[in-house]
Image 1 (cartoon, rainbow, N blue to C red):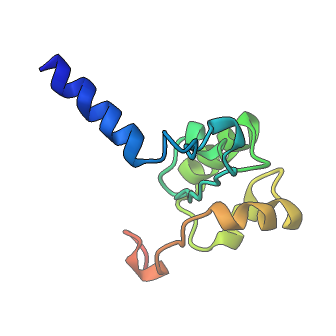
Image 2: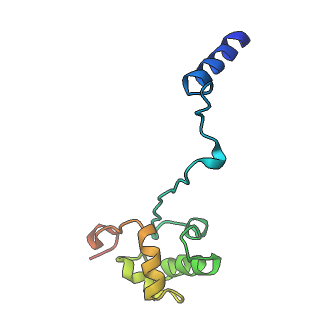
Length: 109
């Protein structure tokens, strides 16, 4: 079994260019970017701090506002949170999941 595993590993290495020196070295690999979006109506503070420009204090304020005043109906509703102005909201926008239609939120008229 060990010999078969070792032979498989060597075969994979050869197949992927190991003999020709074509393996990608991690240090020289092009940078990868990860895209993510956060649902501000369900995210806890650890998720919110992953958004650029949002620290622990602002994340706590978002959670408190949501608990105190109800869910955010539109992305613009985040402006009710102390510390979120136009510029901050614009920088957060690409990382926010689309909010559901107002009528889809429980308790909405």
